[in-house]
Image (cartoon, rainbow, N blue to C red; front, side):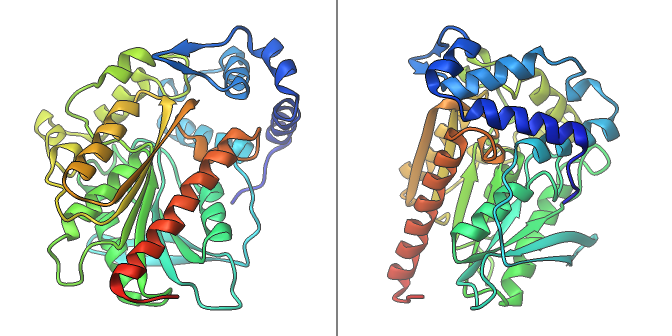
Length: 353
């Protein structure tokens, strides 16, 4: 991952100092509590949003594409944690359309990992990179006994739907076929990456090698065919905006018919027999309701699923563990659910490791 610039380092330092303040001091900066739909925004998150929203500069969807992608990577460097891991390897994964860059994280290289997490970054299928998701991949590798294989799938608009789905499916199959990182292979992702992880489960369900053993979905996009009520509730001012989601959708999908394809909108598909899942959703997020709806659909279909609603948080909390406390606490709860879920998978198979 690229090193922080001087300006990024200064911004990160200020945010960390503010994040360490007592809540009473943070409240003075944040202003009056924000309460919407029975939820109260975390004080430290409200404070950070107030500062970010006051900063000059264009929102990334108003920038040229190259600049938008650079801005997302810069934000990840500022807000993301840097958990120590034993080893990071840059590799290539062969796919039907050519090789993809990928990055393998090992939390402990003194013993074989128990499995692999194939990870897909967020960014609306348009922005995001191996660098933008470095923080959460480090965290997962450091706090589980799984290797993490982060996949740099192709982005729209250069490669619209279903290119990213093809890349995600091929990458998962390659990781599984290697057998190099243990006997279990999970998929995981945040936002658009969570969407791709769910799509991989659907595509591979009836394959001879089988689907993933587990799916870990952070605030996933599950329905591009409509806007759920949380779009109106949190349309602006809470990091991910309705305008940005419209921008993503317009770049990713070529036709209206694409939006009702279950590989673009997993909520519209048949989820019976899908692998066990943990779905983590932020309360102040336009994607809240479709994430909860997807978890409910899995549950109704008999899939073992745990749902984590962080009522006071915003989109992309997984990438903000370097500032404040709430993001790290939420991610730790997600990892605990993943660990428990994997243990249950092993019990059901009669294996242990």
